[in-house]
Image (cartoon, rainbow, N blue to C red):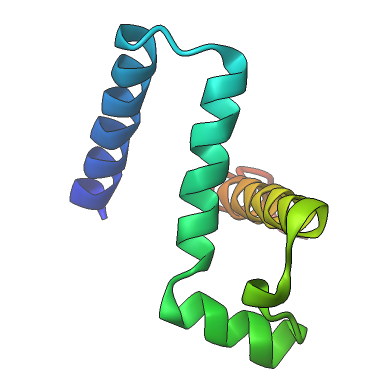
Length: 95
């Protein structure tokens, strides 16, 4: 787990360095993030899950529907990640 976390931090540092070195604007950073999330959603496992569990065929989405869906999925993943992180770091005593 420690190596995986270290690799994620290294990747994050590399992406930040790329953004700074390339002098990307906020709009360009959003475009890069959108592209990364879109390609992540296109993995075979994710396509299957979206179709079977959510009834969504990402290939049928176009224009604003596609953009809205990718942004919604990104937001959902962020919320899930934050919730999981909070549970791992929960130091409150159980009742």
